[in-house]
Length: 217
Image (cartoon, rainbow, N blue to C red; front, side):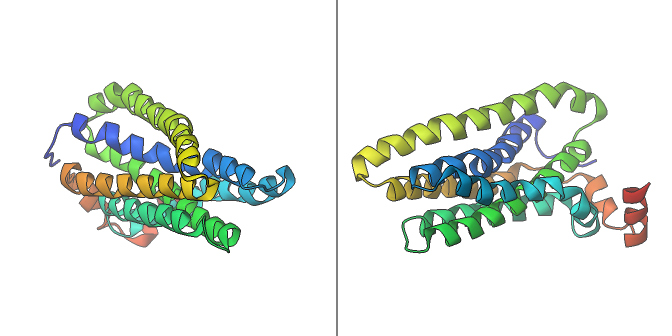
C-alpha cells in the first residue's frame, strides 16, 4: 500500500465533502422552494424524487469498481458537485428557476451518491484495518459537522444575505456560489492529499465478470 499522507489529512475533509451535498439536496432544496413560494404539495412532489440516486446507488456501484480508481471517481465527482452547485446558483435568480434548479439538483444528487460509493470504498482501501476502526467515529463526526454547517450556518448566512440584497433568490444564489467555491477548494486539496493505495489500482485489473460476480454473490 502506498501512503503519501496521514489519514488525518484526508479522512475528515473527505467525509465533510460527503455530507454537504446530501444536506443541500435533501434539506436546503426544500427550504429554498418553500421560501420561493412553492406549495407543500409541489415541494413534496419535486424533492421526493431527488432521494432516488441514493436509493438505487447499489445498481451502479459495480461500475465504480470496474471503471478507473476510486480516487479518480472521488475527484471527478467533486468537480461535478461543484458544477451542479454553481448551476443551481446560476438558475435560481432566472426566469426558469424551478426547471433549471431541479435539473442541477438532480445532477448534484447523482454526483453526491456516486461520491459516497467511491469515498466509502476508498476509506477501506486507503487505511489499514486498525486505522479503519479508529477513524469510524472521526468520519462520522465530520459528516455531522457538514450537516450542521449546511443546515445551520449556510441557512443562517442566506437569511443575512436576504436582508442585505432584499432578494431571496439572489441570497441563495450567493450561498450556492460559495459552496461551489468550497468544493473546488476541496477538489484541489484532495488532488494533493488523497493517497494512492496500490489496492485501488489493483482493482482496475479485475475483469468486468469478476466485479459483477462480487456484486451478485
